[in-house]
Amino acid sequence: MKKLIVIFVLFFIASLSVFAQKSTPMVDYKGHILNGKKQIGSITSEGGFDQAGKSMTKVDGKGNIVDSNGKIIGTAPKNGTFVYYFEDNQEKYTIGKANHTGMCKVTNAKGETVMLLHNNYKQQGACAIHCLHENHCMPESNMNKTVHKH
Image (tube, rainbow, N blue to C red; front, top):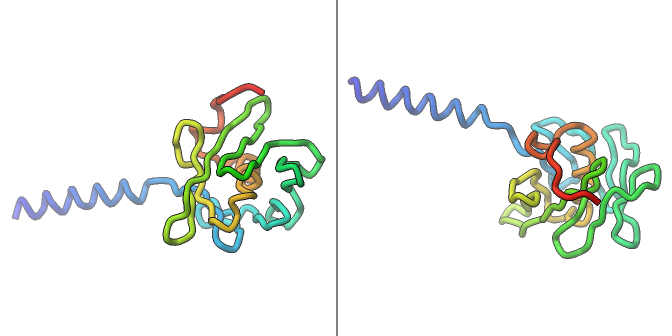
């Protein structure tokens, strides 16, 4: 009986740690940018939009990520990587291969997963990162760390 109680307590503690983990922001197959279960924006082939549908970013013909004021805030080459400029910092991200559900891990230069991105929106990944930064939804380890100055 004591073994059963100990096993139950260990299982209960393990399940609490699973539920306490924060969810990773994601872009679903419809282009919804989600933080937890809350939609904070969207992306389409035209670029990134806030929750109200106002344009925030777009990818221009040269592969630059441009904000609504025309300022270049990143680059999105077609090789599965992109660079996002955050204040005076340059952050590099890599988009992994899609799994069986079409989702790709987006990792920072340290290999940490910062977002899940549906394969349909790989070219607009930096637009989603911008939305996450603007809504303060980037994982905490990435918000205040400098990768490279530009």
